[in-house]
Image 1 (cartoon, helix red, strand yellow):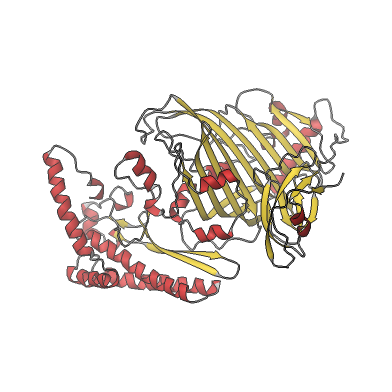
Image 2 (cartoon, rainbow, N blue to C red):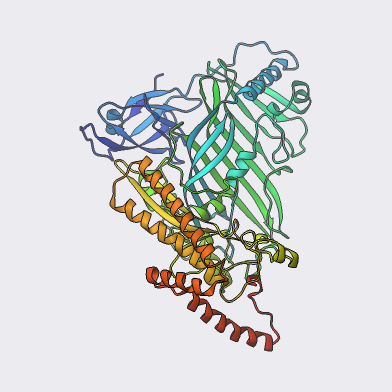
Length: 615
């Protein structure tokens, strides 16, 4: 039976012009009318595509006069339909492929299936071509059926065959539900996904057949053939011993290339997994489920869609330092995540900002500020109504969500921690974004700020004991007809050092340096806001600004002799005051006077002053 389109309620208006039109529809099974989540939708002849959400719905920009869409879902017949027809009938129904057992001879010990998987594993291992793509990542977590976390990120992905080499954040957003004075943070889920390697065993995940040689595979796994369409072999597998160290699952193998089109992996009570809880917390009942589909381009296999669902129980201990009241002994958590690769070899303009990309998802969110303009123009996956509610950070009697649009750098998660602890939160992150009403403090907790020994202080030049580093973060958003630029001045706490003793002028000296960088950023942003530039011109302006910062700050450091020349320091302080109305010297003089009064009071009462980390 051919794929068909069924008439549904007309929800979108019909437009006959050739302009781009936002097309929205739902994909279902033609027999059961069940929705088909994560069905691939592509525009023929272009790199444009999307997938359906968990409700089977999708949205994509099309040219109504010329575009033809293709729908593909493993186990179903491909269907091509003109955009114009989908506008008329907003429900698309796909027919299942007719299935049959392949005509192959299987020995009594199923030797053929083991040989097939061994060959498939070798082919995957030699697939090492590289490519890039855009990537969408979404994660939702629940506790006792209540949402506690919603995360969305867009990345530039670097791929090498079936492996994910790197994910460079373009933009992200996060919502949290504070439930019983507790916050759930799955901070490194994309890293956990990247740790899975379907052809090499590792200490992070249970074993699967294609990670083993044929003989070992035969000892540890039972294989069986499953009915499939004529283009694929469908092989199921299960461990011969139930020891919670081996996955069960299925392979779908392309007959022409002997490469994977799809794999599913499942295990309950896994003894091997990539998760750990905070100190003193016990984790058990870890269940893992992967479903990965691949696209084959020029006989090379690349990931296209990864669904990773997992759950676990946690017994709270003293590691749950944010709690203000005891929880029950065990609490069950469940997570659903999806990582979708699309627009291959057509990447986002990555933020111009140097940082270590091999950090957690949450750490990346502290570095790249939420950009609402980006989300206006990028919707790789249509959100469900429930997801929209979570993203809108609606507050009810049961749970509360916080927006992250104004929080980055050391401000990240500020509201939640203040809410939970009811006191001044301890900031996280190693980067400080410039704000006119906030100042940088030298934190001696950082190893790079540890005070030098007496010998080092006497023999090393001061330029090796004090190194201040800041950079401009420039985020460029592509719209239909222009480039929108947002920039920020960022002080790199972790890459700077202040290894001499702190005196009354130390903080003024550091903040004047930071303010000088901000002056140059504002000059650059003024040009970006007033002039329509090409990408190349924007990049040239960015490099020129960095050069200006280097010249200006170098002159400053030498002129004030790294803060020792108070006369020159006052001159530069006056320059900053004229630009921003900030008198750093007076500000910190007043701060230290007030701090001394409180410090003496705390000592007299037998307490310990809380400021030792800054000394």
